[in-house]
Image (cartoon, rainbow, N blue to C red; front, side, top):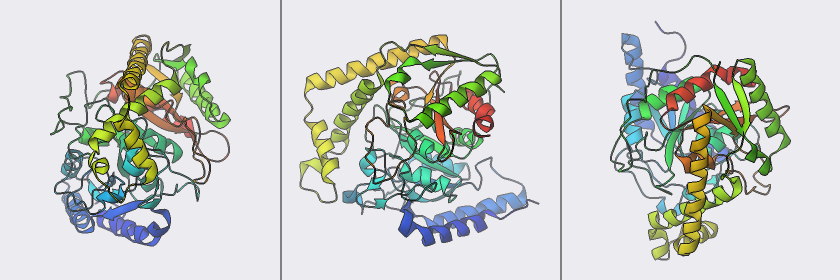
Length: 435
């Protein structure tokens, strides 16, 4: 017999909490109450019969609202899509349901997934549960807030230039961007097909690992890839002894909050104390700000294609700043796009060359911790996270104690298809980082 509340009891408590708090924190956009209650009842029955499916059976999950959940609105955070109802589940939601996950509902995001504060002009300003009035980051801000607020166990986000890892960092969570192609994207409202990836956020790396097992797989996404033989969902080192972590000198080119650098030094000390080698390295042609701007230009150009219907006619429900970004992407001169592609290629090659000599790269996740919604938005939020998107590499963010106040976060980047090794490494060190 399993002790503790049933899945159904946990779900009902969560639904009551959402009803009570959501008008103020604007985390959830839609609830899938009937389906969630049915899934919880089935999970409880399996638990009682001793036939649970696996580690995600009965886990409460929230889904970013740019991923389709059948029967509920599928807005991508855009007011013009407020009445769009998903006809079927996205591929990743289908796979999570098969693993026994209970899909509670969809959560807020930055408009069109193009931004990193989740101050959404159509669906409300999403609040970071760690501090009233603060941003949870973005664009998957609702995903981070849903987990940090205790509403769900795991949330699904999408990451274009850091949109899973930045909210995880701001909300004190673990977050994961998989290798490009590992998680199929059928049913994703695209911003940038070149960079968009789907990844989980949770309070522990162990739950990220279980989530990736369920989420990985090919579907109708034409860019999804079969898992290579080298990708083993079970294998992974039990510690970090003997591993080499490279710390790029280019971090010094990014204006980082002192507490963030304190967190990086703490992570470095923890790794060294556990037998890892931590080296200062040079990533050559990676220039963080320039590379991030190159990635953003390509994302804006691709977003203008993906959401052309918002520009082809006079459409309400689109903010002026978002329309301006799409218009800029649609009218981008070829020379600027070529320059952006060159910046991306240089950053990608520099990252891959560095990972030939190091097992992992170690950086801060974001240059700053969470900040007030009313404060100026820093331009450099994605300077460090963008590297993994440009290079197609898996990347993990972990919370790290950074002195008094809000947590800091560090990012660990691995070679493509070493997702499992990266998660096992993160699991080995996560407790020491916040202890």
